[in-house]
Image (cartoon, rainbow, N blue to C red):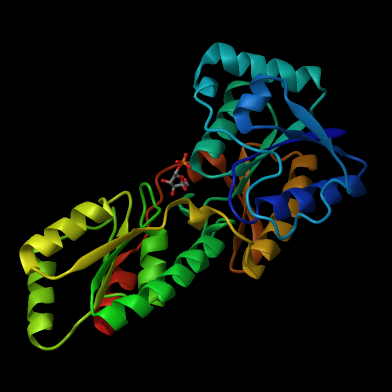
Length: 317
Ligand code: F6P
C-alpha cells in the first residue's frame, strides 16, 4: 500500500485522528491524501497531500482541517463513479473514512459496490454507530453541554425558574441522557422513549406546591423542539419557563483527553488494519481493546438500553 485517502466529518477529535493516521502512515512510507470537503471533494478531485509537519499543532483543535460537507451528490450513481475514477486516477490504494452514520454508509457503499478498500473510524457526537460503545467526539460534546448546563443551573436556581435545554441528537438521546444524569436534571426527553408530558406537568405542579422551585428538563432535538415543550409546560403549570438551544457549540471545542487518546489509538489502528488487507470494517475500542466491526453491522440502527440511565435519573431527582 503506497497511498491512502482520508475523508472526514467534523467533531472534536477528528483532527487528532488525522494527525495519528498521517504519522502512522509515514512510518510505513505510505502517503496520505486528505480529501477536502468530504464526499464532495472525492467527486470534485479535491485532494491535499498531508505530511507530518502539516498535521502539527492540530491535536487540540476542534472541527476538521480538511473541511467537510453533507454531500447530496454522493447519492447519485454517476457522481459516485466520478469519485471512484478520482480514487483510481490518484493511485489511492485505500480509504479511511472518519465520521458517523452517513459517512460510514458511504464507506460501506464504496467497499461493496466499487470494491475500494475502506476502513471507517467512528466519530460522531450522536454516538449512534451500531456496535460502538463510544465514538470520537461524543465525550467532548457531552462535556461541552454539561458545562453550559452547569451555568444555566446558576440562573435556574437563583431565579427559581424552569429551564428547558435542547441538546443535539437527531435520532438518539445519547447526549441528552448523559447530560441529564451528569447534570442532575429532573427530566429528559429522548427519541428512544415515549413520554407523557401531561404527567410531567402534573409532577411539576405537585413539586411546586411542596416548595420545589426550579427544574431543568433536557430535550433531545430528535424528540421535540425545546420551545414547544416549554410552551406546553407554561400552559399547563402557569410557571415561568425559559428555553436554551445549545446547538452546534456541542460539536466544536477542544477534544477531551479521552477523545484525543481514542483518536490516537483508532487512527493508528485504522492504518494498520487497512494496510494488512482489512476492508469494509470500522475500527473500534471495546473494553480497552482494539478491534474491527463490519460496516454493514455498524450502519444498522443502534439499539441502546436507555432505561437504566433513565431510571437512575428519576431515582436521583
Ligand atoms: O450528526 C451529528 C449532528 O450534530 C446531529 O446531532 C445534528 O442533528 C446534526 O448533526 C446537525 O447537522 P448539520 O450540522 O448539518 O445541521
